[in-house]
Length: 464
Image (cartoon, rainbow, N blue to C red; front, side, top):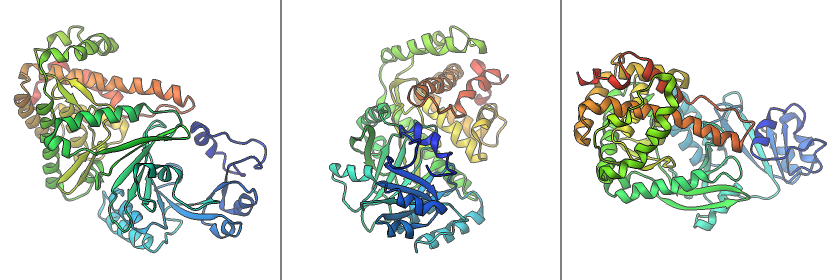
């Protein structure tokens, strides 16, 4: 790292990259600012990243260069857009931009027009120049050719927005195509393979359900590893993330129809995977032995699980928030199945999905706001509360959950989901001990649920 770029150190070291302390002679990669482009080139490393667009000096030194646009900021980007890939960049700007104001739609179209000509003002979004001695696609994209990926695919990169265990992904385009055909997910730290194995199992579970359930999930093409970094190749889910769709102004009725379609799909997942009550016993034992005791501070009744009647077991996606649904008009695909369970309680996926979708339908919510907003929604204090209550009544009838047991099922849902973040943070500490946990929002819902006088195991306002 050349002078002034110490901010890179934490991220590089968290990714398992050794940062050279004395000089650059031994470095494989040199990182520098635009004013240091000449010094970076003179170091002779195999690769150079320069903050800015000084590619001429690097080309003069024998490097192959590519300008990459980072959106929205260099410090916390969501996208890396190669300006030599106009079709991929145009798609990314249209489908991965948050257009929650009408003026943003006009700005996005202007950005697409500029990017289609390989131009973009540095004041609008930062540009970095990536230089390598040899031409070709990013290393992981090149390695995916073993899965019969074409040699000349177009691409853009999306960054995981959670902590360092969230996966990055290349959206990959067949030559000449305007929409991605594949998605290449990869870990941000070497050696982390758990999510890929779990995702494979979850996709197999959903595919075995058949029908419309199987039609609305990605197809796993294969998995591979490159220098300890695990990756998988799937069919792409083209469209926009549901959370971004819900933020689009002026289409509440359209969004409600889409939410209803996804809700029906969730019920179909339960119908197609339903198993006898006996299959639920391992999950009940987990709730009885791990989840309920973990919340003694909230005065959770110790016999909460025993209060459940005999219920069917159903498969769960188990992380069905708006971030895991990609929508294109009336169509949608449900992605990221690494948390799926073969046998779980009915209603959980639906409650989880509607909590996130209806909160964001009413207004965007930051993670720290989510617990309070979810509590207000379920307590009948939000604009979309009547919509939620109608769904709960209909879903309870469809799944065979007695009305008197809905509050117990819902309470166990939020206790379990709020606890899952703690388990994730254990993995985070093991793989990236220098990366602090981030607020997800879910970890606070159990407390908000139990503390609210209208919620908890006696929740009944939904009955009307």
